[in-house]
Length: 353
Image 1 (tube, rainbow, N blue to C red):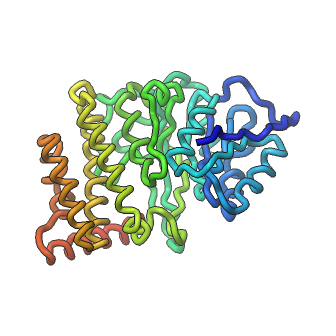
Image 2 (cartoon, one colour):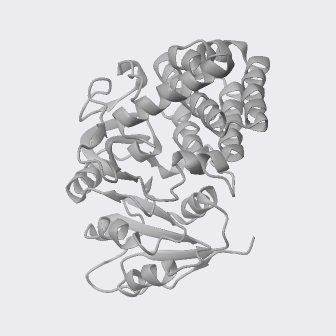
Image 3 (spheres, one colour):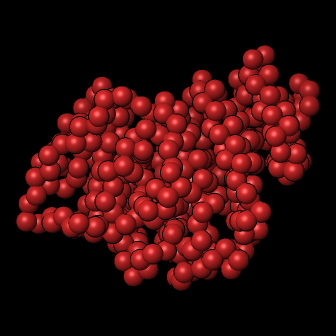
């Protein structure tokens, strides 16, 4: 792969760069010209505290031209590279980041400006914490009522905490990428490197560094706006069916991370959350294979569970014989139909894709 090209940044008096911004925001962008403005506008106005890196991942539309307008005003940096996928764009952003903390904002999502200002102030006052957690909102197209993922019932508010001070996450309370702001040095210490030409790598981003987090801070603000329902979006069920091989690849990589890591050294509360997250990924993989319905997809689903059972029987039992694991793996043709019905009913209630 050729070396990414970084556009020259023109500095203007109203936006000064510092050697170490509080936060680097990485915006992976592929053919995002239609909505990139919304994402970038939500990030502006914070001065030198924020470094904004747009990684144009080989777009064939006007993504680079849209970003260049912000470069010309001295507001962002633009990095252009051949197409390598979402993971490659995040890898590049991490490599170029100079902020003490790092946040990924996908080009079709955005941040709440008031919440963003509070996040920056909190990071500045608690420099050195490994992780900041904030709420995220499912902004589903055509759905008036927005579903918000909050953590106030399990994470101590407005103070630094360690995992033993947390409660038990509910079944829908996953610490997804949208909720997380990592210390940049931590991401580099764990040598995070996401696979290229692969969708759904956000699961690896959420879990792999999390196992090394020792201190965290929860700010109870609705920061991240996760837009879903756009035609052709990667999380649409029909798109996931076409990309089942990539979902299964991420599933296997996440399993390898969990089975190779010494989870006995991880706080039991954090270990429980990592298993809960992995369980959800296995269920999604199973459901997408069922939705595909082909003999090949069903065989791949069976291999997923067989591989997990062979590699880590304890993890297998925790995942396979949980409530959602049992629902997702009901036997026979009737069982498969019931599994799909249960999944789609939950999706309709919660509002996710």
